[in-house]
Image (tube, rainbow, N blue to C red):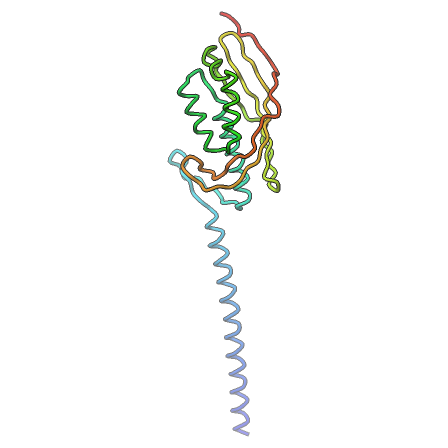
Length: 204
């Protein structure tokens, strides 16, 4: 009888120990999973300095980030290519910078405009050209885009406004100092460039 009681107590103790160990393993696993989740979430939070003040920002998924970079790259190219003051060195500098962001289609368009005397006309008339982006449509599946903008041409006596629409493709390339987004515009062309207003400047 005594031996049976001892065996029963041993079995109860063994079951209790095994149950405790199993429960401990489950709890430790849960805690580790929760801690890992917390660390992963905290890594998505980044502090950046805005005029010396730390501002909390959150990382986003790579696809979302890449979409923003594509749009920024396309916008930058158009700003460089179409922002042209009556300053020969400034124009050449902008054009040179823009050529790092596009394939040979950009150089082809530049040469066409140059042959037509486009840049000489800007210098001779002291015109100042700028562009404002309205929107950029991106097709991530086809890797194509459509750019909508408004070009402003200011001369001594008149201000001409044009609607500009261009299309093209884009592909990923290695990032560099001259191409920080790691994107190359391809098969770029202008599909619409029409006057929408021609206003005479007021004389004082």
